[in-house]
Length: 139
Image 1: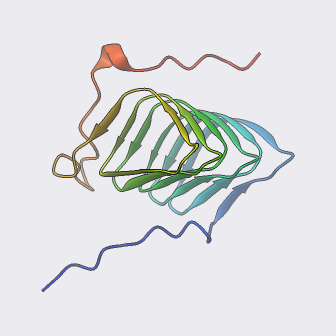
Image 2 (image 1 turned 30 degrees about the vertical axis):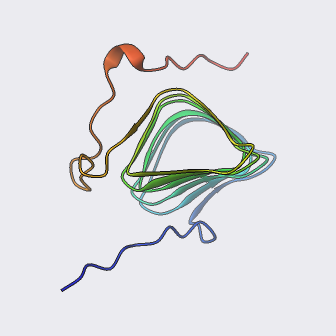
Image 3 (image 1 turned 60 degrees about the horizontal axis):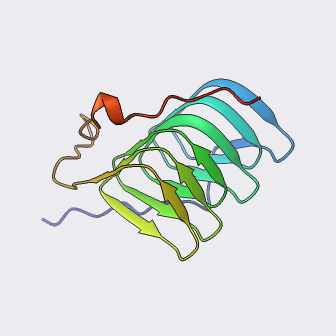
């Protein structure tokens, strides 16, 4: 009768970008991704994405849930929640059904939160084109 709410499983992951790893490209996964190193490009996951304290992610991200304890530059679309730790920084526009920012966390960009507008199959409503960040390559 009542739907079970799926919790984010940030402690379990299937894909790891290690601490001393630098990777560029498109990353697609069905499970949870953990970034401890550096990744630049695009991330699409049906699961959750975790950016650890040592992680640096310069990418547009689409996922179920997102936890940022490191650095993220890019636009984010999640169907669930974004959790920004006290050490986390997001520079870009975010769309989510829920947003948690710990004291000290930095969000620099536009935020669209409307749980009624986010559909698991269709994804979140789109942010206006003129407000999207243009990702610049790392020098």
